[in-house]
Every structure is written in C-alpha cells, then in structure tokens.
Length: 85
Image (tube, rainbow, N blue to C red; front, side, top):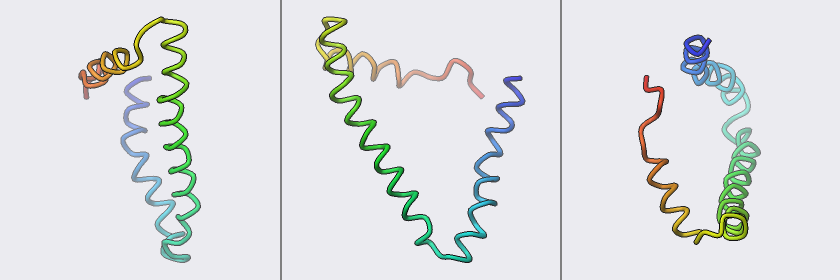
C-alpha cells in the first residue's frame, strides 16, 4: 500500500499540471491569483500559529523555554526521512 501511495504521489504534480495548464492557457495567469492569496494566507497563519500558539503551549504545559524547544525541533526536522526513496 505504501508503494502504491508513493507512486501516486510521484505522479500527482504531473496530473495537477495537466489539469491547470489548459485553464491557465485559456484564461491567463490572473486566474491563479486567488489561489496565490489562499496559499499566502495559509502560510502566514501557520507562521503565526507556530510563533504564538506553540510558544504559549510549550511554555505553559511543558514548562520549556520556547527558543530551546524550537532549536531542538530544528535538529530533528533536519534529520533524514525514516523511509528514504
């Protein structure tokens, strides 16, 4: 099941390009602007969530310094994936 999911995920960007390309060619790049606004809004919300909500939760519940927590998380995030390709 993991292998099938991996194959599907590898071809998904090609499928998305195939679906979006005709729309962009017909209506122009301006049709993607609402999508760009949504992507930016989600990215900003995620940054705010990490900076404020996580920091408060880590300080209150784990009684850790948020900077120490984020430094430790950065080390883990940089590690290689458990399931390499």
